[in-house]
Image (tube, rainbow, N blue to C red; front, side, top):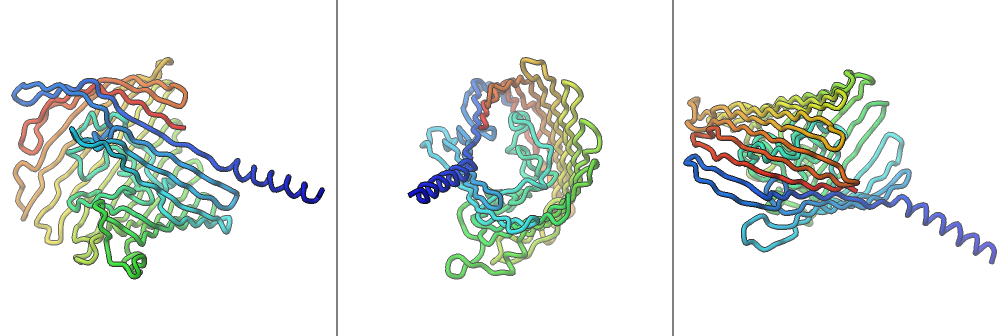
Amino acid sequence: MKKLMALIVVSALTASAVLAQVSLGGDVSSFFIPFRSTIDPDGKVKSTAAVQDSFGGPDLNTSIYIKGVSDLAGFNFTLRAAYGDGSAGGAQTVRARPDMYVWIQPHDILKLSFGTMTDDTLAGTVGASDFAPYVLDPGKIDRLELGDSQFNIFTQFNPNAEGNDDKKSNLYAPAVSAAAMITLTPLEGLFVGAFIAPELFGSNGTKLGDGTDGDFYEVERIYKNLQFGVGYTIQDIGLARAQYIGWRNVVELAFQLTAIQDLNLDFGVKIPWIGDDSKNDEVNYNMHRDYQFSLGADFTAGEFNLLCRADTAFNGYNKEKDYLNGFDLIVYAVPSFNLGFAKAGLDLGFEYRGVDKKGGEDIENSDGMQFGAGLWLERAFGAGVLKGGVTGRFPLEWQGKDQNTDIFIPIMVSISL
């Protein structure tokens, strides 16, 4: 009996230890726009209001995760959901995407993860403002990231977890429904990662490529489209990284400088090549993406902070080069100051879109400019953040047409637990 009791106690303690390493958390964000004034070029005014995410889509964005971790293995389940379809009079729906993977570390330097996952170990480190989509119109930006602008510097593993099958866009990437990620840390400061995705889908749910037995895909296609990245941390200097993204036909190089106190400087370059002209391989379609150069900086001096960045894209073309993308430049700056009771800031954004060419000739009305600004206050309340202000998109010409003036009063609530 004593042995049995001892066994029960040991089992209970072991179970408690395991359960203690299972964690639950998540984050939720939403915007209330109590007032928006839209003034068209003729001076006609329209006043509206909305509740939405920062890109004008669903009313509420959330992600909830459950993580189980032991010393050498674990699992992660993340449910990303958005409520509301964003269309006037439309039925309210919940759109959800689960990310689930298991991982094991059979050796100190080796980690294996299977399922669906993203990894930001090497990703760009200077991002965007929450108010960026109310300062610049995201509907005009299709060749650079605005909301996740850190990825203009260097892309995360699994470039676009949601998928985007607009082949005219420089941001095209299929959604990944199953993948394996292998990481190595053979030396101090060195990180090597390979992201291998057999199952790729367009955002319309179409599988890209024929399977065998419903779940096996051609090895040549899978490994041609893999993502492989290397990063090395140079102590007291910075982080150098490089990667190949097969399904985007691009090589990326970046360097994060950390040697200067209170300054984070991150610079990235993307070098593309033309894809395959194969009807049976929709991932590697016949397109040469833009070259991209991006620079981001985050500087703090006492209570003052300045986040600023410049992103460029240019010279994307198709096989015959009869259509050549013009120069695209986005400049964004966010100076802010901690007032003690809250943080006050200013958003300034500008985009210049150069003239595209077809057959060597300029395409009329393919260029444009947009500009915006905003003032805001932000304060934390426990695990939540309340941020509100006034922003405006001001009239500049875009592709041969005069633009509306848009004034927003965005109020954001964000909670992370």
